[in-house]
Length: 328
Image 1 (cartoon, rainbow, N blue to C red):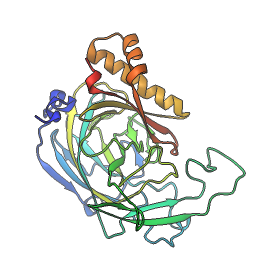
Image 2 (cartoon, helix red, strand yellow; image 1 turned 180 degrees about the vertical axis):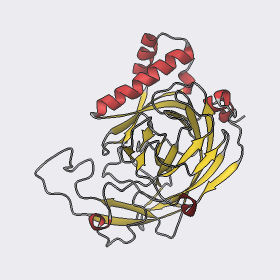
Image 3 (cartoon, rainbow, N blue to C red; image 1 turned 180 degrees about the horizontal axis):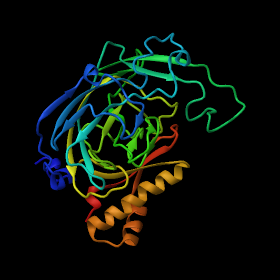
Image 4 (cartoon, rainbow, N blue to C red; image 1 turned 90 degrees about the vertical axis):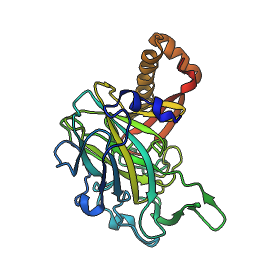
């Protein structure tokens, strides 16, 4: 029996985790891509809980960087980066609910070399930025184009990295704000947590009617922290399965895999992101197992795990998790 039958999605979802009507959002269907998360855009698609949606996404640069000789600063128009598909309106979704989004597959889309990574001026984890002001001059900008196929990520003639795709940016609309797609927060957004990958289910808090699901910014592979500010960015074809959990009540994104349960917090400084993620996890473990919060707190000091998503965005993102075998 697949673990999905025991997932929160299957047990509590309106559609019980059963796949329903299939839909597709092509580049042409999307038309205008979005650079903010908010409730003011017209939904590109309305679906019932249980819908399976195939989405064609752009890379984080909307395809502007095509050659290794390209100058990113001359081509990119900050803050119009990280284009998002959607929003997808989920019928019946109300504030206090959660959208359950199961990631089925992520496939590179477009001509090779399909992957792009680069060094950008005043952006990254080890350089001066607008938020970390230093007198050091910025590093020279540099672009690397990389072939990504079924054999992996072809870094060089002698090194092939594994293909480990995930969705870098996914979330719901805030209630009234319109917030840059470059920023992660309580609604999800640009978390860059590699566990948001095929085989996982992310539970996103609903803050406005219909939920308004956005997604984009797929990565072929990324190290913890997204160190230089850019992972291996790819345009992709993404297949997701959407369900609705009434009254779920989670205030921050929750992520479930076959063997782990995680919460994702986003903040600066980084330790506050960890605190958010662990606080949500402590409360969930206590409710799930019947332990007191103090006992769950002590349990997690022994077996909790932290995954660093990004240490470069306007807010940093970390996931705190526990293996399901300890939920007794």
